[in-house]
Length: 528
Image 1 (cartoon, rainbow, N blue to C red):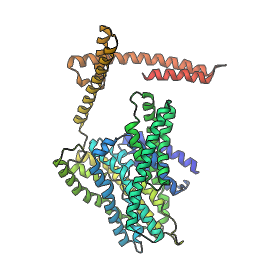
Image 2 (image 1 turned 90 degrees about the vertical axis):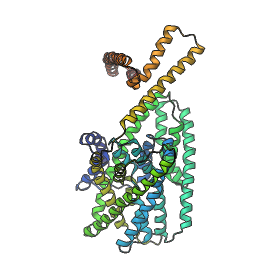
Image 3 (image 1 turned 90 degrees about the horizontal axis):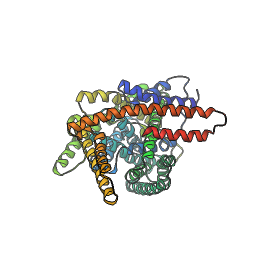
Image 4 (image 1 turned 135 degrees about the vertical axis):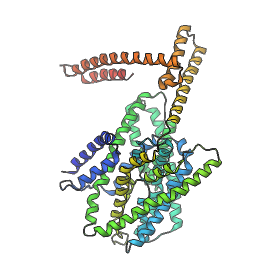
């Protein structure tokens, strides 16, 4: 088997793992990691030869961009305090604790290398957290915090990692320069992200074709990441800034086709890239086995200790941090999302799975220092990091559904339904306001005005039938049944039309381009 065949198997697994995971009640990223492990132990499967420096720039930008599409700047702003406590403060605390323990238990491990190990295992993975927690019906406030933590903690961890690696390679360290690098990296990243977001927004206005607009959104995350890194900024923060800018300012309510097609394309990209990323984690078992040859007991012991530090530092940090946030929340009128019970705090603790960023940073550790000597204990660091990633991802990922069910932590469906009803009412009122504006400048016959008034109300009623009284709900249900029958018959008619047009493609003298154009018209008509 060659590398290309292996890539095809991983991509196929990424597609199949979603329905299999839904049926088994297991997260697709965890299944992909297990698939990677199985492939790694097979003799005929080759080692993955991806340059470490390409892993983060290739996998992280689309994953971050896809994750940000599900949130908003308002949500981040409202949750800035818990996100800061988790994405910045907790990363620092975890890095320090892991570095101190690793420096103590691993003979001869320099402090700078220990800090690098702490930084690369400190950030929970944003993709793992949202992919696993998002399918369990958790309260939206928990998912929001996990998303915010996962998206921003990579920024802190990667900067700490680079500072530690530079100190280990050069043998020099300056706390002042490290702090200055952190600030400059953030400033450059935000500037690049805002500039590219503004430029991409202008280009989207010029590109009226949905295909070109979606193609641009596929390029923007990579452009933002690469440009920021070239200017010594944080590529991760630049992608987040660009994505948030576009989510806030590039949304055109009337651009229906681009929005529908864009969601489909990004769902495909998210599924495939996530599958490759987590499959790659499992495939790295090759390197871990080679490193541990003859030293299994020693290396497994070190990895187990570091796993314990990573897992329990998060718990010991979350308990007082959640208490403090609750106290501050009670003193002021705030709409931020916070855990409201010890059960939700436990679920947040167990959701701290490591993933793609940790693997990429571990593999990106240089082979040699500036003096030409081998990087100190590089193989040991990679093995320990792999142990942390596999334990947190597989163990916590597989047991999180059980824990959520056991603790009975579920979303507040009544609150969500109430918000949906509120949106339905607002949508109907907006339609009625627009109708009145049209009637003020146009002569609309009474019968047409009455029909449009009913249609305006039906807009909200179709979103949420509960906004109407019993008589109107029954009438709406009758109309829905009739509409379903009409659509079924119309669907069969359109299907016959599509088959006839498609059959013409193979007839002598038929122009395939014209056939495809007519077929697209029928396809669009079928979506209405």
